[in-house]
Amino acid sequence: MYAVTLLTNPAAPALNLSTAEALRSAWGGGDLKWLALGEAAEFMVEKVPSNLWDVWEGLQTQGIDLVAQPAEGRRKKMLLADMDSTMIQQECIDELADVAGVGERVKEITAKAMNGELDFEGALTERVGLLKGLPESVIQKVIDERITFMPGGKALLATMKRDGAYAALVSGGFTAFTGYVAETLGFDENRANTLQVENGELVGKPGLPILGREAKVAALNEITEHLGLAHGDVIAVGDGANDLGMLKLAGAGVALHAKPSVAAECDIRINHGDLTALLYVQGYAKADFADV
Picture (spheres, rainbow, N blue to C red):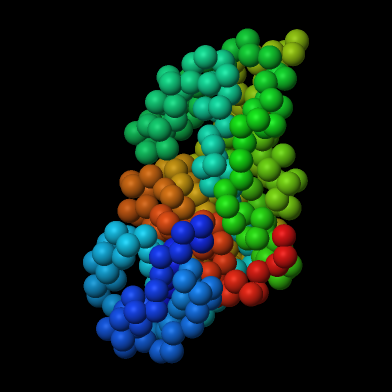
């Protein structure tokens, strides 16, 4: 059996009964179950319909995401998450660059790297080089004044951890930020790059080795082996080209508000929902969410 999940932006719910019922009827699905009224619903089908992606495209214009996946084993035992533009709403290096007065140049490089147009390691090295001489204190200033969390993140972490899941934050960004995000949201561990500092200023070089796409794959392999889990026990979420390796390896790889080139390679594409979408696709109803 396959679970078909319909979901939308919780801040502007766009899912109505007629839309959900029409699809359920057309696909010969089982009973419709509301996970959150107006926000998320699901039903079961015996096989994935051949017109899945055509229907997906039509629903996108209505602000609705559509996911079809095997029903068995969809509740996961581990969360592996990217940070920038995934658990938080910003790209940390872009924010640092903005303070340094080189924001536009760095954003340009970031966008190309996330689209897979540039080598990640080279792009990171070039961007960090533009931060040379920036006071180390700016990192805390950016955290305090510019970093905001992606909606739904606290509920996602609290709910999965309540039910015994392990949570790891793996970023191509920097430990100065992942440490803060991990502690605030409740991740069990975090891995990221380091910014070299001397005499209270950024040197303009990242610590080596640089953590990119392969480091995220390695994290998935290492953590699952340590915990005695299978790749199928993992739900991974990210938005950039350097996330594709882990998204494809995980049992459920979620492209969240991802670059088009990234989303095109993933079966779970969330363009309208927030991070609670990761709970809905696991079959959680809103009433099942942990209090945050």
